[in-house]
Image (cartoon, rainbow, N blue to C red; front, top):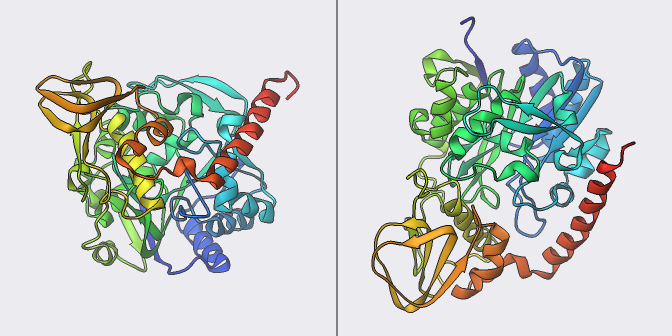
Length: 430
């Protein structure tokens, strides 16, 4: 099997660019890594909003430091790439996060994978996502640097290096198998998105809905030469048993590494135990809908085809919609009108004779006794977050971020730019 995968834990309390450059350079040298050829950097820029979403993405200063460290190690052709979430143009998130300005400062191209030309690749090890439209900058990369933001996750418990690969998908394919098969789909993508070097932004991590989280200071940078190894360490820091984190267990079963700490060479100037202690007692809302303080009641159904709880599908969409609304207007959940939300095929009773019940998802159904003053159906497989924001939230008097005038203006503008870029991509000489 060769030598153990290595994870380096470094104490770091601030986003000082020069200090980060030195730290990353030292880590790269210690791991014996040398960037060669075309280098692709993949940060997390899943969402961003200058008003209320500040900790969902890899800190741009850290990305600048990474570019400088790579150049110091001899790298010349560097590209930064990402495909943001929620079906919103990634350019909007590049602007709101400050990532575009950071890329401009260091003179590196910043690309949206959804706007690049792609080539279709067959994934030999995949269970579900058996082929993939691979963006050219990803396909041509000789050395991959993944820069995840460490966060709790509403479906997968943690999001770190392996989960970062959802952002290598174009928007066209992002929601394929995004249901009870999500955990296996994530691991399918490792075949294309296997990084050479992982640098984790764990200086300030996120709790709650990962796309609009609340900040938690942790004060560390994690570096590794294996994505599963660093995720195993991250799981322990966040308080999870990696054997119970579904996508990590799946990655182990496919031969990407071990889930045992004894099989990982962990070094650095701060210990896993110290970092875990810093997060003791931290609560991450929206991981479990049943624990939310709200008059709303949630009925989590199955995928009727597989019989599995559809945690990565409509349940995920509902969590994301409510999590964003709560982050935008804290207290929204507690002040909501009473009612019910049914996600998928629910086997049981749903009794709300004087209230509204929203059925979420194409397969949404109640097999037991069902009573409601008003029934609202929102389709999709999975239901789209934007549809829930437009057609569900107001039913319970929850203010929707979708109707914020600034958000609407940004979305319209960047959607127009995105469509122009897609047209340009189709030109034969592009």
